[in-house]
Image (cartoon, rainbow, N blue to C red; front, side):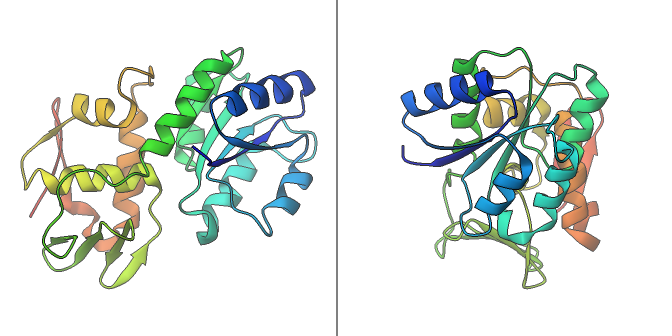
Length: 229
């Protein structure tokens, strides 16, 4: 591992402890105690993962997450929100804004390192590819397995790594149902306890980014989702 992880938190003890454990896990770490320091850094460098505290002194973490997800430069960057807010509504809002994971304080630094590995694993192409290393969905959606990107009507869709993985899993089912449990296991394995609406939030974003083809992602009530092909 040599991925770059940015940690943004104004609590010095958390910043230091998190950095130590991430470095022990083999990651490069860039630590920032304010939003402004981090924003200056990402003008020239894009981390593989950003661990973002919500309660920053100079910018709300939710606003930061929204800003990052609006910039296509950071489409492939994973975001993990770190927060002392315990309401499920905050977790859902963070996911709605494009975060890949949400860790509540207090937390285990070792667990956080595992979650970083998990979101990074979602970026790794998996499964069999077609002969030209593409998955063609009705000639309107193309999943490029080499470039790890999705084109909708020949335009690149700004999917997050999680959204990409879900679409790829759906496409590989060839119209059969992808159970909710399969999605959870393939994305998080046994390493994460997710809130009930996590999958639904990612599916909602995926549909939005597929535009007029979003209705191809069908909900099978009580079971999971399928792709109408």
